Amino acid sequence: MKKYSILLIDDEKSQRDILSGYLKKKGYTIFVALSGEEGIKITNENLIDIILSDFKMPDKTGIEVLEEVKKINPEISFIMITAFGTVENAVKAMRLGADDYISKPVDLDELDILIEKIIEHKDLKSENEMLKTQLQEKYKISSVISESPNMAEVINIAVRVAGSKATVLITGESGTGKEVIAKSIHFLSSRKDKPFVAVNIPALSVSLIESELFGHEKGAFTGADKMSKGRFELADKGTIFLDEIGDIPLATQVKLLRVLQEQQIERVGSTESINIDARIIAATNQNLEKKIKEGTFREDLFYRLNIVSIKIPPLRERREDILPLIEFFSKKYSEENHKKDIEISKEAVDRLLKYNYPGNVRELENIMERAIVLSRRNTITVNDLPLAVKGLVEEEKSENLLSGTLTEQVEALEKRMIFNALKKTNGNQTQAGKLLGITERNLRYKLNKYNIQN
Image 1 (cartoon, rainbow, N blue to C red):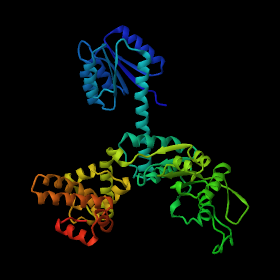
Image 2: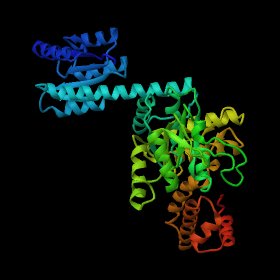
Image 3: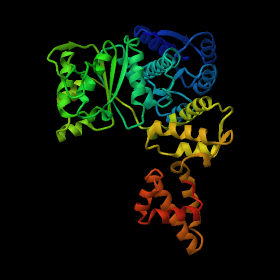
């Protein structure tokens, strides 16, 4: 574990001695400065992780020291020591980049908590960067794009669990990137050179799901003209990813539970047990605890799967990731489609940043691919975006019309209802017409009348 360095800046000898002695006993590397200028000099010459600085000093204030050291290294964490009651100084320091403040006389227990919180944040950030570097450079899975604290925690858990054999349950809405995180765990594990087998449970035939998962012997059922290995055997020594585990039939859940408990399978049509060493990562967009109450999912299976839980937040709850994802997908699909120097207009970026993405990252990726493929220019504009995104602009225009005549107000309301209906039905005119209570033919007439592109 890294040994963190702390610079203590204080002109009062008694406080310097108490704090430096205490922090040395806690195992930190301690630097001491008697003035702000000396503290800045030490920061220039040494690798400092955390600065603990008094606010009031003869040569420089703590605020001035903070501003100078942030220019030297923005990653340095800063705790301001302030006199009791000078909250305004603490607030100003926080606005300028201080991580926290502590009042005199310094409570050592409180100081411990502040420093531990900062170190925990630094460790999390470091592990996050390590994972992204490994994924992007070593394993070429560069689609793990994240800037948000929510995703930093997801990636941090993925790093920590990768080296173990623990079963992982990944939850989150459709399109959030559950399989990407599952692959990340696999490629960071000791199994990285073995198979990663992804199974989309809803895509499997209910009558053949056990054969697909566990394999079958020749003659086990009509059409089984030869022995076939199942996905678990194919994933032996590697990882099996069971996507949408909530859709697995109850009868198959019993057999899956046995695999988790005994690490054995039986092919359909056989009574012979086969030892399996496949790490299981499962994912779902459903509430499994609710399904347990409804009797459609086994509680014992849930607890076996849920050894380590990773919840991926929807894109609308991590908006810091939208712009980096836009840039990533823009570069990816520009290269794939041999289009150089593709730019995105400010208006288009604004629309993309405001949109809620019910389809999450997958929807954003589809939007960017579509826009780049269909664009005739080097600049992606609002007109290149799908109606669900572009419609936000039209709604704003419609709202501005409500100050006009009665006819204009009626038309504005009609346009807005059409946009809302098309948005809810993802552009399906038949379904939109039903929502509006008009025929599809009537809807097409109104689309032409208002020059609405669908």
